[in-house]
Image: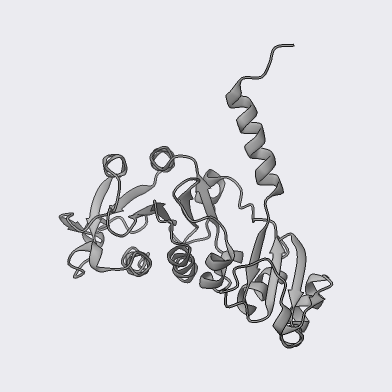
Length: 261
């Protein structure tokens, strides 16, 4: 029997590693929302007596037996500097399904997506997930590399939004943009030097599906991303885009791109 090519072996190894991956969530809000999320596979729960009292209803709903630890000897395998509030939960990452399924699912409102180009800070991504949930976005989409993975820090910053707001990570951002364009999306890349504002680009097109692409603070969007989007836009009155934190920029952009009744 011929040996498998190296790329096939590496792909199989990556698939097995992903299947075995677990995440430790921490903090009362993040743990509570994960406990009551029926889609979340829960493996191990560590609580202090005080946290157990505060999360009693969620623990009961989840049907998981917690390990009770003394606050001075909290043995969850998380960063000692993490503000865990006496609660840590080991889980499997969420599976939100395929992009094309998420991108065409909607009620009566026009579709909105947020795409992230090398935004790797988990705190920024967590805050963006919160904004995306508030403004009714269908998903936040990052890349498999150079993007923040699902972590406890991200979940804590998202303050529960990670359990409800789809967060997908695709292999290639430019390919993802092209795929969305085929689905009828207007893809707008945020750039401080763009000539038009978001509002101007959406004049008369508020009912169109819209994807907003944001780059990392400093370098911004990659040249390939700028070439692939339909149009570069700026946030009105913001001056240079770099003057806004990327999570704040996402919130303002989602507001500017909101459907108008």
